[in-house]
Length: 67
Image (cartoon, rainbow, N blue to C red; front, top):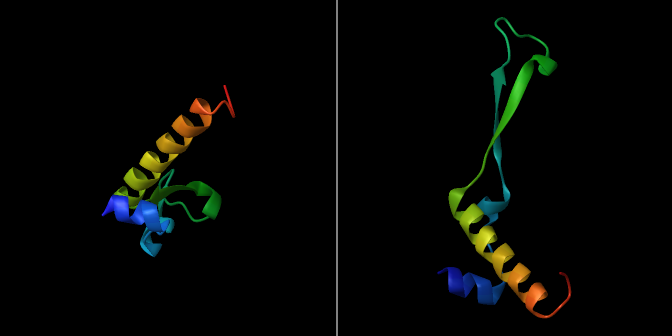
């Protein structure tokens, strides 16, 4: 499946989205500045884009585009 997606240069739309949750930093937090944002990402997307990034780095280093 990953090989097909790589050839088509297509990724699932849900891989581009992150859901956020807000955790309070202290008790009785009321202002947005008193909360910490945690982003929840799709694991499949992280694996796919990690593989893609590694392949791009290998290509540009092998061809002398970067050191």
